[in-house]
Length: 134
Image (tube, rainbow, N blue to C red):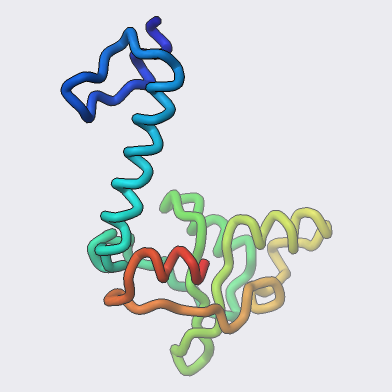
């Protein structure tokens, strides 16, 4: 019963901890539908994304990884020599393109392993559109 109570979120007057498993599923699907409707009306700006971590394309993977670790980040925007967007590097990029291939992070340039020319969304775009783009 305790596990059921933890899963149950009383969003109706009739919900109870003694609900059957089927009722809990229907409550969850109602919550999911409610979130979907809310997300359709939400813009990227309202999600309050964190300020981006920015690095230069000539930085090493080690330096960028250390910065991400110290700031508890999982991605960094990479700029080119003119300050424009060159790409993005994520913790997954580091895992798959550096660690798995046994490249030395202290001498590998982030520009060699980043995702170049990523698709971008505007802060005024809907959250749903941003999710689809991802």
